[in-house]
Structures are given as structure tokens and as C-alpha cells.
Amino acid sequence: MEETFGQVPGYMQLLAEPASDHSWGIFRDLLLGETELSPREKALMGVSAAAAIQCPYCTYFHKEEARFADVSEDELEEAVTLASTTRYFSTLLHGNEYEHDAFDAETDEIFEHLREQQEAAADD
Image (cartoon, rainbow, N blue to C red; front, side, top):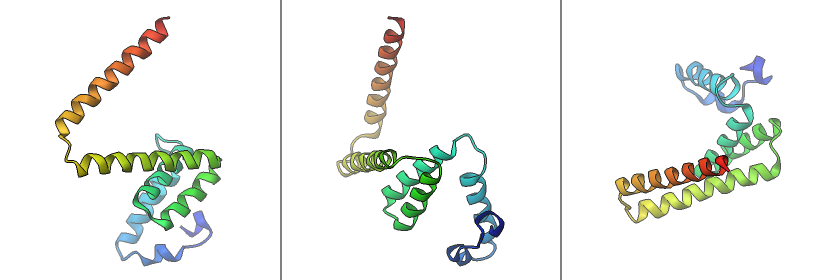
């Protein structure tokens, strides 16, 4: 960790054994390692998740991570807005106890329609 970060952050020292090595491995491999997602995509996801769970620590970290990955301020604002939209509609659906099967069926219909429109536009 010190080799990667130039230090062992105090918050990482809060991890109890044996979780410390395991937690660092997850952090290192998923956030910093080569995965299917680019560093920009991972940073934007981190910002979105941090904003949705309203964690100031995670928000600060992931915004800095995103800036390091050359994410613009406009892209950061959009990521947070998308996260807030997801949280908004999740609250609406959960609070009204909307039927999950109906939601799935409607969503499938919507995306089938969008695919058909996309295919028709490509054919033109």
C-alpha cells in the first residue's frame, strides 16, 4: 500500500486483522487494477455510488480519483445527477410498493421498443 500510495492512510489502519490485507487487495485489484472498466468509468461509478449513499469521505475520494482520470467537472456533475435520478425513482417505486413483476415487464417492453427504433434508424 505504501509503495502504491506513498503512505498507508490512517483510515486503512482502522481495518482489523485479517481484514486489512483482504480489504487492500479488493481495493487495489478493483479500483487500481486492470479490469473490464476503464479508470474513468470506475471513477464515475465511484462518484455516483458515493453520492447516492451520501458519504462525504467516498465522494471526496472518488471525485479526486475521477479528476486524476481526466474526468471533467461537467461529467462529475452529470454522474451525480444520474445517481440522484436513480435514487429519486427508487424512492418513488419503493415508497409506493410498485409491483416488481410489472416493472420488469414494462422495462423489457421499453427496451425492446428502443432497440426496434435503433434498428430502424440504422436501416435508413
